[in-house]
Each structure stands twice: as structure tokens, then as C-alpha cells.
Amino acid sequence: MNIKIYLLLSLIILLSLAACTATLPQGDIVFNFCDVDENEYIDCPTISLSTDTITMTIEVTSSDVASVDSVVFELPEEYIYCSTDPTTLTTTDKETYTVELLCDLSGYEEQNTQLAFTVTATLTDGSTVSITGDAEDWIE
Image 1 (tube, helix red, strand yellow):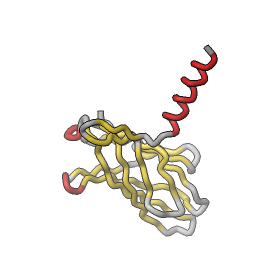
Image 2: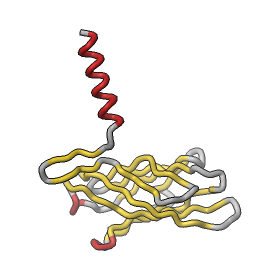
Image 3: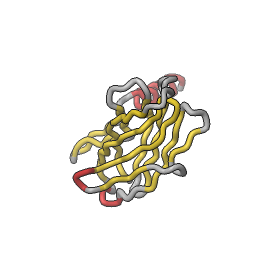
Image 4: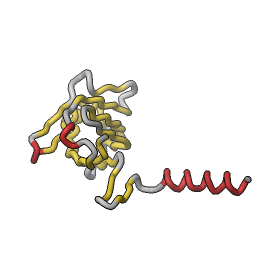
């Protein structure tokens, strides 16, 4: 009995540590992939896409960042652009920002969808930086 529990726990740990990708006959399905281009200011640990909402977490990784001001998501070939406003980009500690943004992605239901994004941040010296990245998720 203990061996079965050990094997089950090992399997759960292995699956949680594995890259969040599944392969089906129709191709790879990617779950919650977010990658920020080389920068020293922020990280993107999580993203989730649905047919009508983008949910994203942004973590500030440098004390040089005074605030994260906006995020723009885009699928340029489809003319889809969605951007944050003060109600869709929130923080409680100036280190972790949450994006909860309405965005019509209904045309991508049951598909892997990759969005480009640009984060604009204000630095402590008053200058602004634009940080780009890519996010991908399976839309349910």
C-alpha cells in the first residue's frame, strides 16, 4: 500500500515539474507559457487565456522599477490589440502586479494561441522602459 502511495506522489511531482506541454495527434498543446525577453526588470511567472479574458502575473525583479504602468497584448496578423487600464492592472505591494483584462479571443477557442506583449514600466530615475515578451496558452 505504501508503495502505491509513493508511486502516485512521485507521478504527481513528476507531472508538476514537467514542462506544461502535452502532445496530441494534432500537435503540441502548451499550457500557461510566458516568456519575457532579456531584461533586468520583470518576470512573467503565469498567464492564462480564455475566450474573453487574459489573466497574467508580473513580478518586479529589480529595485530600479518604481511601477508597472501598462501592458499591451497583440496578435498583429489578426488585428487584435488589448491593453490595460488602471482597473485591469493592480498591485498590492509594488512587486507583484496582476492583469485581469477583457479581450475577445473567441476565434481561438480550443487552440493554442500565442500573444506578443509589451510591458511599460517607470524606473526610479523617472525614465520609462518597454519590455517585450511572448505568452502562449490553450484557450478553452
